[in-house]
Image 1: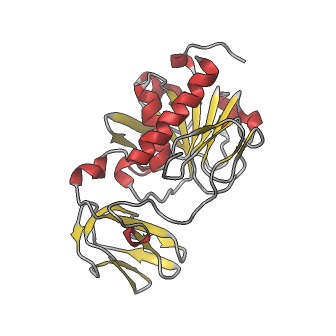
Image 2 (image 1 turned 45 degrees about the vertical axis):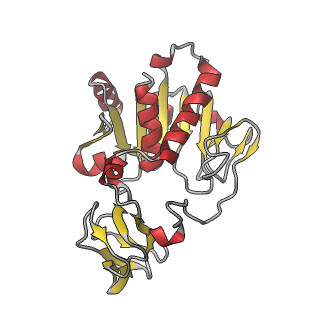
Length: 269
C-alpha cells in the first residue's frame, strides 16, 4: 500500500449523480482533492443542479462552490486537478481505474445491486447502499436507507435491503416522485424550481400525462427529450417549496458523504 498523506490520496468515484456529488464535495472540502468521477456518456440526473454529471453536458458545473470539469484522459485529469477542480469522465466501463491506480474506489451508483465492483480495484473499496456485503464485495459498505442508521459505516455484513419507498418529506413519500407511466420519449416545458399544484401536468411520455400528486416545488426533473422506461423516476416535488434546496446538497447526501470520509479516515489517518 502506498503511504500518502490525506491530500495525496487518489479517489475514484463511480457515478457523478446527486449522491456521488455529495460524496465528492465532502471529500473536497476535507482537503482530499485528487478525485475523479466516472459516469455513463449520457447520464440521466433528476436533481441536475447538484449533480456533477452535468459537466458531461455543459463542460463544467459548480455545486456548493466546488467546480467539476469534463476530462477525457489521464493528462486531462491531472490538468483539472491542477486547477483545483474535480474531473468527470464518460467511462461506463471504469477503464480509468487501473490507469490511475487509485488508493480508494467509491461505488456511489446506488443501483441497488452490484454492477461489478470488487475489492481488488483499490486498497480501499467503499460501496454505498444495498447489493453489497462488506468483506465480500467491498471493504466497507455505507448505509443509505433513511432513518436511524443512515450513514452507518458497515465493516461486516450488508446494508439494509431496498425498501422501494422514497424518503419522507413533510409526510409525503411515494407521492413526491414523478415516474414514467409508459416507456417512450419524455417531454416537458417545466423548469426546476417551478411551483405546482396537485394534478398540474408536469410533462408526458408518448402523450401519456405525468401529473403532480401534491402541491410543491419541482426540485428534480430529467431533461426533456430523453427516452425513458416505464416506472423510471423522472423527477420529484418538494412540498416545502424552498428554492434554497434547489442548489444545495440534501441531508441524505451530507450523511453519506460524511460516512465515506469516515471510512477513508479509518484506513488512512
